[in-house]
Image (tube, rainbow, N blue to C red):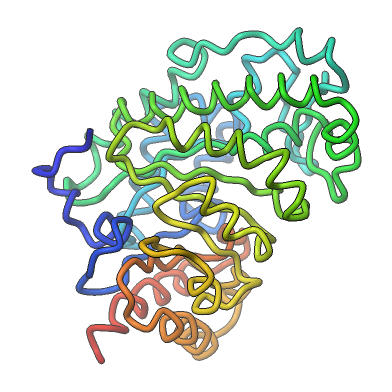
Length: 350
């Protein structure tokens, strides 16, 4: 149970997660610690991506550095959604120029049964240590977000062997091998739930569930093949911990995602924030949803596009400003700082 006496508890970000009124719109950005920052690139020039994830001191450093430089309202631990796959024994590798590769994908029941059991406290202890170090280094009023991939997204990587455009192997297995699908999704849901609760125990105040690829599904398929497992994860999160439930391309799935759970529903840039929020049952907060490419434009365009989103929120309690996905590597840091300052000042100046 989260402490109501801690400095971060009544921060604007935490209040927004609880759909309470805030003095201004809080903002944080997915991939706010990333390649668009020269300081981050300097660290990455010395260590590989997986090595950085596994170094708690460096992971904490880049997490806190992003908050201090950008003056956002929340930190998110530096990690990767695929880290729980490595201890499963599937041969996870991050290949420069290609992204993550699974050398031993799950293509049937036998593969699924051979997945190694994940003992989070041992195999992912470096993430938990990074959270502890980050919580100690952050200003007391800044909340820390932990995260994990939702079951469908993790399953799709396992089955496809990496990123995919059409998810042919995933959808085929999902529809033709019900026993395999049930076993795989149940295993992933169990690991994900325990992983997130370990992050909360280590010092995360909020958790975000990334269902990055679930937008490839129809509402019928989502309800049958995904919703029960996602709901199992969210229902099991430590009481009092706000959950942000985020996916991309999910405009047709938002009410189903809300039914699966989450105090905050993350929106990508493909939907109008006001219209999407109106679809959802109250009380629920929303997060989003600026197109990341807007940050490649000049300040006038950033101001114009951010204003449209802030106006669509209509000062309704429970809006957390974010991008519709992560900050792009070619983004200028000054543009990000300008966005943060503008969002903070918008309601104060009205």
